[in-house]
Length: 118
Image (cartoon, rainbow, N blue to C red; front, side, top):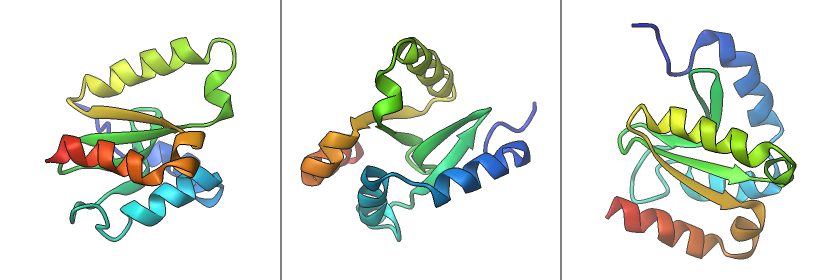
């Protein structure tokens, strides 16, 4: 079986995404990093296959995707659904939040995630 998680071929993409995180991702990362959410370790810009997810907790098999403007253009919804289905096929639970939700209601976002963990 080939390696699917954090493939070396995706390293440059992950690095570029980490250095160019939008405001909403920075806000969410500030709450998740350093085991900031209930003591669980999250990784940012983690790749699964050829896809990079914004945040991932290996222990919980939990992905968090932050949907910015690019997720609301024509064709993006179908791509996102297909991408999510492929990632979920690895047994990973998937959460999606918009930039607006994170910027305006970070505590509500975190509460939604904690409900799944508890």
